[in-house]
Amino acid sequence: MARNKETLILLVDIGPSMHPHLDYAARAISALVQRKIVHNKHDEVGLVFFGANDTDNELSSELGGYEDIVVLRPIAVVSEELAQAVDQFSKEYGTSDFMDAMVVAMDLIVKKCAAGSKGNKRIYLITDGESPVKEPEEGTKSEQVELLRNQLQMHNIILDAVVIRLKGENGALESKASQENEFLLRSFADGTMGDLVLVESYTTLLGAVKSRSVSPTTLYRGDLELTPNMSIKVWVYKKVSSERMPTLRIYSDKAPLLDTTATHEVKFDIEYKSSVDLDVSIAPEQRIKAYKYGPQYVPISSKEEEALKFRTEKGLKVVGFTDKSNVPRHYFMKETNVFVPELRNTRSTLAISCLARAMEAEGKVAIVRCVWRAGQANVALGVLTPCLGSDDSVADCFYFNNIPFSEDLREFAFASFKDRPSTQQPTRLQQEAADALVQMMDLVPYPGQEFLMPERTVNPVLQRFYSFLHLKSVNPEAAVPPLDKALQIIIQPEERFIQKVDFMLQTFKEQFQLIRSTQTEKGGRKFWKDRLGENEAALPGEDLLQIEDGKPLTFEFLTGKKVEQVGSLNPVEDFEALLARRDSDQWVTKAIKGMKKIITDLLNSAYNGNTYEKAVTCLIALRRGCVIQECFRK
Image (cartoon, rainbow, N blue to C red):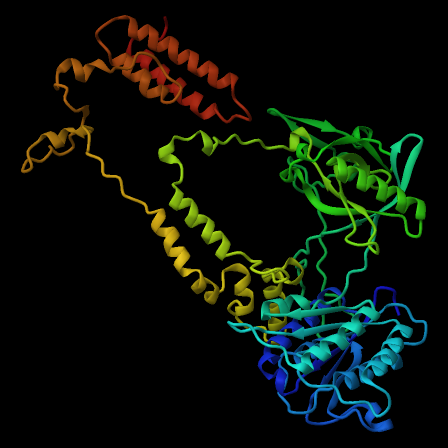
């Protein structure tokens, strides 16, 4: 078994108490399988139901007992058939004893995986825990739990349990059976390094069922240099990494339908042609990169490009320390990494702990120069923020975030609201309405209860994409379905939540009413026809002159705004207007000189001939004007 391969048993309660939740449990399991098909296609998955009407498992046939447990699908490589099998769960009425079901699941994994095999082995249990566990024939339930937990530890099997605890408007009282089962499951999860999740909404259920635990991979292993003579051995991991959409590839259907080895992959081959002769191909040694610099392109050879690269040595160096306030949160760039001491290195653990606690006490952060790997093309600057362990079992560490250089910053100056006059400041009632609205819409209304926790909230875009991808694989003509109700809560407030704060919303709206400003129309600009009577019409083809209101319409007004030079916007029209003026002899000479200057400027500022056409048009107008004025030879 490969190191990163996972063998997983999906253990689902389909008993009577789970009937209201089975639809969303099926969606959560289906999403898990869909992601495995895309990202972990070599993983092996089995499906076991308990609380069923029938019994179908090997332990029952061999030893007896283990009733109402059905192995719907033995452990096999994840496939489209499994994705279709978990689309919908049947509602049955058997006894839901998760202890017997766990024994059956463990037996399947042990028989499938050879002793000492590598890879993750996991049982994923989904139940509401409302059905009591049967009393064992020998010993107590606690002894049975300890025995089974030891078996799971011996075979390196992890138990992840999801217990559904939906609450109504006024909450729900937990039954005695659910409290006991929760205690037993927590003992299993803690003993096998697993996880127990109590979900209180279907949105949380979708996020609680994860396809697999991502194995941490070190980004850097080496020294954190404090001075040339002192360093600390550290390992660096990614703390947060955004999951991207799967890459869509171009598919070819030209391969024979019966060819099972066909990859249907489309390969691209780029060929460069000569701009002079399109039949001539340009060999790689005849090509060179060029960078645009102003209106020209500057060629840079591969040797010059290699020489320009910044030569760096792998390592982390502390540049210095500064106050936390000097590195605001909006300076953080990219993803967050975590610096931890080298594994099983006591001296590194003590050094990191002492440094982190000293920085926390002084309110300082460290500025670090980072080169993660040898030959890295650039150097990154980052900030180390101390993170102290919540208890003695959790080691102290540092969070790392990239910080910008001056070229990366975008400064925007906004006026402060404090400098506004009192008429533009919120009133006491407006401030109280805003405070009340924020408090009522708090996502953490009570300690320990939080809505839309990042750890339990799925990405609705990715979730919908995987669901549609599965739907499309079953039915190529399938249309895009509407967004699931459990996902709508992520992108918009829940309706019953809005109803609770409706009064506060109305109060807030009343305090910030918008009043339409009524302004009297001032004297503006009017057209010539507006001066005419309502029954008079403008003459056909007559231009409408625009005049300023209140000024008399005189000859001086009409002739006052005349062209006095040849402009660059409409040079031909300006040139002809100057030639048409008869109030002085200087306009002809000025028009010709101005047009000559415009033509010269157009030619001098041309880039790849972009102004040649306009220059030729001006030259034609100049020649025609000179002929008309009988001064072409002069």
